[in-house]
Image (cartoon, rainbow, N blue to C red; front, side):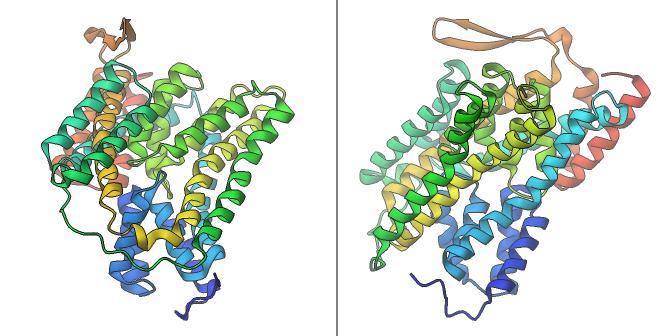
Length: 442
């Protein structure tokens, strides 16, 4: 397909707009999608309202951060492959560079009272942010009893049975796909015929080329790490782990964080649970997709298992590798699926699969919420097992009263005073510093 589009928008102008969005894309996916809507639809009028919403629906059918996929797709609509690449890369790059710098400050600033205090306060903000996300997504998603049931089953499966997150996503998607065929109303969908547009010429060739090139780009760094450093090196673990997460990351970053946090802390030992909460808090306050917290995890994991590299070099490479395998797969899927997007517009089975997956994500986020609460508020938390059952035992007498008090303040700011995310994080960071300086180590 030709990369020229009859819209009169130059590539240079679009390039700087995508850079602007990447630099000012605060507030998570909701804020970023709203920002792009204001710039692309309302101000620039590069995309019609209906097409923008249609593109968003298409992006939600695929794994990966919705806002980055949406930027990539709109870039593709405007200027073909180069437009999609520019939009997708610039959406991520500014925040990734800032996150890399913050990761260095994090490891170098440990033990500094002001830094420790700010991170302590941010932990309280993160607890409230996750609870707020759970409520928001639950209200939007759980429209029927079946969806509520799927959410409950997902929570039981991941919290009490320790089922793999990819298995939960696959099972929910298969359920929604089947149910949508005969009873779409059970999934909150309206029954009706599909209205498909004519297939785009050459779409299979475009998809095949995108898949072939994308797969090579995706796996080349992982293969290089295995050849140069050995199959058991932490770089290979980072590449494989975050590649797996990239293809099952339905439902946004909060769903993925639950699985990622438990694996990074309990399976790989790359970081502690409080450090995972720190990473999420830092990602919340920086521009770019929230899922860039994977970069923070990759940095710490590689920094602490650097052999034969220096910690600094290993941290940079681990950070870059985690970012690469997190964001390349979603862009690959956009380029492969874009020629088919109009045909998917009213596909009830895919919409049913997405509705069921999103419902299961609510249960997964509930698991994440409880996991964060236990590990932030209590000093003694132990994973217990009995046959197939798994639960977390904690000593209520080890509760951190200062952390609980800060979490309560953050909850008031969020739910009673309706303050913005960045403002809440900033206030809690200042309060955390004050608590740390006045009362000593927390």
